[in-house]
Image (spheres, rainbow, N blue to C red):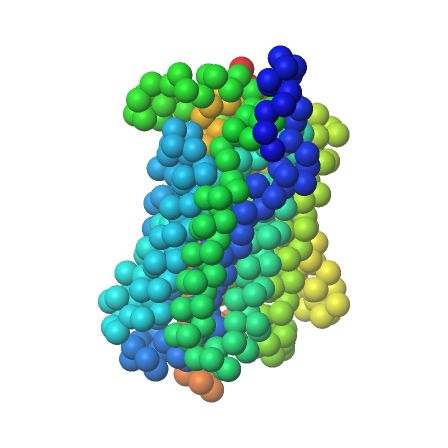
Length: 436
């Protein structure tokens, strides 16, 4: 992997696809770990409750510490990726994720466990933005949307590992031993990233896919770069728009779908959880498809708008038409996930809207907008459900909400969808071309 082309004055060849995907894939490995850590507490409910004598609210708070730091780190991550480079950022993120996991595994109290979760969220939160930064250097621009979709699919694989496989491992080894093993595995990923990943193919003697590469070193201060990027209309719009997609999927598949399906469609808890996971898998598969569709159409806004309208139409059918047969309900939820995969166009659309050297920063802003969907809608839906609670309880003592309560709470997403539709009309179409 030397520089023979450069030595004889020829233009270096672009990196082979196998090398590019290897470099990108090591960044994706940290994103898989991030998803794994995001949902792991759901499998450890009994162990954590017993170990730390947690109430339901305290358990929810312990899980949420991951999200607090994850969302907060997105814009700083983008700024650092643009200035420091993804290699150092991913290595540090993986190393600190390993350390946070170890703190969580060995925590003597709930306070220390919370600190571990907070560290994990902040450290693993760098993965997605850094991956996108790597893709802009190591892959042709036409593959950026596809790589973004594959990233989400890999993340869902991590969430799947944190389901039944994690449960089997915990039953066999105990949760603390499993978390220690997770920390060790993450440390190995950190070492592999440092040894293999490079910020740009030129560092391995290849040609770079990054446009105007020299321009990335000519920016001003961090504050000047942030002010510059916030001067672009699309930057603000893509902070507000994607939550209309992610709010539905992360709210439903991540929390409130299971009680809705068990209460009003007679699914067992295991069946409802499987259907929620199926929706999430369909979401990741749909995200892979939308990139090539957008590239062929030479448009970002058109497929994005179509996906938003389709998502809201399917959501309306699920919320406002009760009594679906089970096969039809499964079909609707899978279709919802597939159509909602249009949200992935947020990232190439946003990247192409600003100068290439600011790709990391705009990706951080866009990813923060995506995560805001779940962060806002999960508690907001719960608040509305509580306002409509009639006092009914399940045999286990949990609150039981009637269909009208769910319809009122789930209808909040239509307001976000309408706002997103209007805002999309004001976005500047990039026609799949990078801004100069």
